[in-house]
Amino acid sequence: MSTVKTLQSGFSLLEALLAVVILSIGLMGLAGMQMANLKTIHNSTQKQQATILLNDLTARVRNNFIGAKAGDYNDTAVTCGSPPSNTCTTTSCSHTELAKMDLYQVLCGDGGSNVGIKNSLTNGQLAITCATNCTQAVNIRLRWDERISQKNKSQEGTTSTPHASEFKSFELTSQIVVRNI
Image (cartoon, rainbow, N blue to C red; front, top):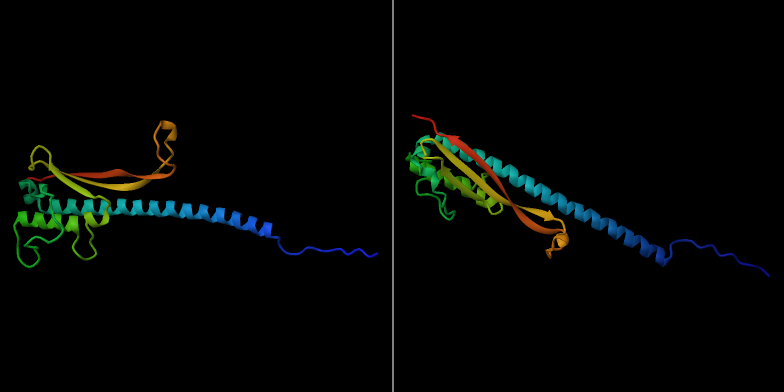
């Protein structure tokens, strides 16, 4: 009698299935890390854009200190549908018209590379107030929302799911001391 030995070569179906499951779990972990990375990059971009816009508006208010002292920057109810009638590019304009144009460009952008608060920040809001009166100081507050991930709150009695996304408000402020003329 002869005994035949069989040598097995290759993978069995069970080994291949197990390899696919392990690979899938690893790829899902990588996808989750990529999503967290994209969220962090987006939030960082918004913080950078908010800082640039706040510095831009601060410089504009300092350059138009007569309009700042008159309280022309307090009206932030600008509609982005149409720019102000006088864009101050070809004709001279008053300090009030310059303030309106400054607010329009900071809130809505200039149509070029300069993007505005309403276009670049999630739920971006601008508030400009005077300290005691506008002859002393002007306060600028820029607020926007960022998406954050939150841990499971089931132990606190709420019904949120794990890794539920919420928005958190962030704020930048600046105070400009109006110089005397």
